[in-house]
Image (tube, rainbow, N blue to C red; front, side, top):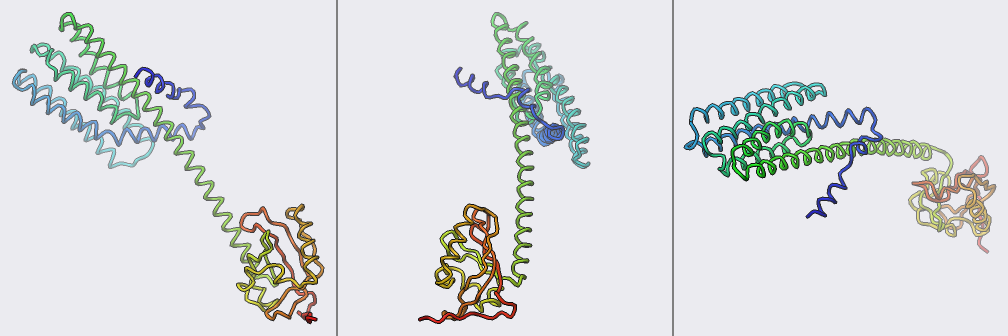
Length: 360
């Protein structure tokens, strides 16, 4: 158990490490998000105090002077109503950073007042001879632990409640509980230190979570922008290619056609979809394959550099009909979305004549 505790403590980020490298915007963002968490947890704190006060009223009704008990319970419930009213008022307003900061300050103040009211329960029990009643430490410890759940985003809020709630309890035990009173008081103080440390650890973990979330959102936004820009560039490139009079054909590293522009139909008389999947052997005239491949091999060592092709014949719709083309071959193997050799060109003569190679 001690080893596990030491491991947990070693993993808790120090304040210096937690704040290192923060921009001013990130520091403000952490504070605002922490205030927002404190605001969202306020109803839980109010409800816990109210329920525990009603339970205390029922348990101690027959053992404590009813006037005193009703006065204490009325004060706690009245404070809960005031806190609920303040919470509802801020809820109706704008959730701005300034409003959240104001609410956090007010909420911490009322946490301290509420803690003092719960701390007053210890002398009330002591005066009525109930200091040894097991319910007293149980209900105060439970209420103190509930503050971590509702106000863990701010360790100051937890301390604001725990100090005035637990200090009177420890004092009363030390003065009235006999020989074991000092030991019990020490346990109460140790419990207070433990809950304070837990609250501090919780806040640091929350700060790290907020910071990671903020940076992830920024990274996602930047990535989304790059994706959008890339998509826009792709659409613009595709529009230029598809509206161009020149034919554009992309060959994979294995020599298969992966894309043919719409101008292939105007130039070769073939539906571009029918060219996809053909190999250089299927498309390029046998007499020109060697030249075509040699230019492709030269472009392997010249990424992005345009290699000129003065003459290459490619097959049309008829297997015996070839069109003489002049163009450029570019190595774009490492360009995302292309990943191949790009041929761009047009008919060799201005009148779009074609050259027929008769099979011998």
